[in-house]
Amino acid sequence: MSIEQTYQDIKSLKIQGASNISDAAIKEIKNLVKKSTAKKPHLLTEEIETGIEKLKSARPTEPETENYLNYINYFSKRVITQKISELKSEILKEINNIQKEKEKSTLLIINNAQKLLKGNQKIFTHCHSSTVMEILKQVHRSKNIRVNNTETRPLFQGRITAKELSQAKIPVEHYTDTAARIAIKDSDIMLIGADSITYNKVYNKIGSEMISIIAKHEKIPVYICASLMKFTNQREEIENRHPNEVWKDAPKGIHINNPAFEKIAFKYIKGIICEKGILKPKKYVKEARKMLKAFSL
Image (cartoon, rainbow, N blue to C red; front, side, top):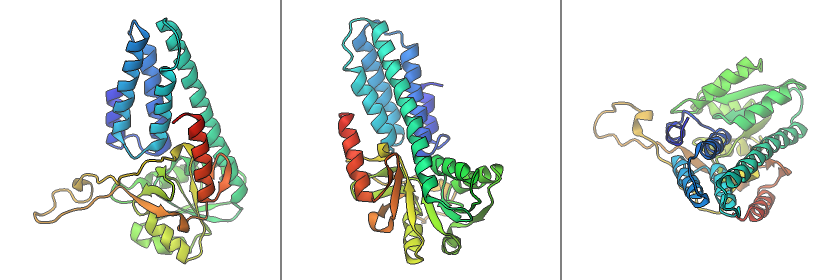
């Protein structure tokens, strides 16, 4: 792989899901450092920064990727050495630490979710979240669960979820997006991922706000499964993707809107399952800000 190829794969959704995108981006910067032929430290840090900015631009609405890459950039510029070999060694060691901490965070989220979920529950989910998938697979090993999921138009990421659940021998019922209310009414709890979280909203795949409102109305608790690294202090923009994803070769005169994400107000969310436990949204924000401050981000 290369920076350019990874950039294209993220942009085209060949690599999708916030955690998968950050994994791929971190791995690519690691490869860049290993393969770099820079002779001086400042040339390597410039190379790293250029690569990071390129990868960040592939999906600007992914703060987990941005936070991790910003930290790598911050760290690389603060290594005091005149030897390129020492700089490479220090950066690679820190990236290895980041990857280990990222794995640890995922395990903590899974463990915290296990405390919440009970046997014989029917769980509703939307789109495809690698974190939610890992939770469901782990929980199913010890508890009898079933899943309702929606297709997630226009790119049908929900089918990826349904296939993975089926392969894991987890009973799954697949619904069209417009049948979401029926699926939610037939569920005990709702788990979804998050692309980003701000001080007052969760940003996730289009349809997420609609189903959260339905869940609230039906008294089905909504839980977001997300690392603290998905928090951002920045104002997020909603990405509008190509109309052809919705209707290829549509007749002239039809304007097609294709927003990729939408915002979920905290009032619809029961809690956020993260490394620190199952937190109320405002508590999550407090913990995330504390962590990012420690990272100097």
